[in-house]
Length: 114
Image 1 (cartoon, rainbow, N blue to C red):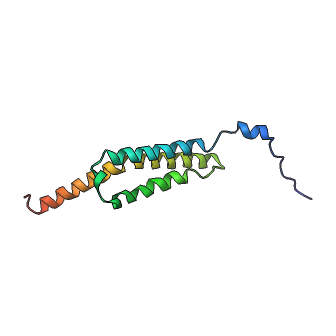
Image 2 (cartoon, one colour):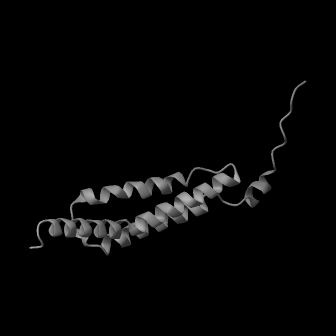
Image 3 (tube, one colour):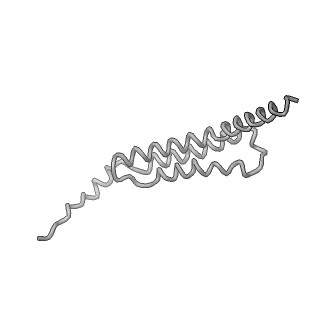
């Protein structure tokens, strides 16, 4: 017996399907704007370029949200990855500033405070 594949939906049904690319596109714009705003409002504006290297992590998270979802759980995963990437791009510069200030304070404290 030959197994037949289920019939394809008509092209009109394709147009009614929700656009999977809308959420990743919004997350991409949010990550770019959040990263630019976070970087411009931090003291790193005139720092060396290597401090911008960790922005690769949020970019990878947002890029992972572009993978087309075939299951509802994959859609949720894509939304979570995109949200985490946009949020990480927004707060990275301020978190790095806080971390460098804490390291500087701890080094200052261990040297005797002045």
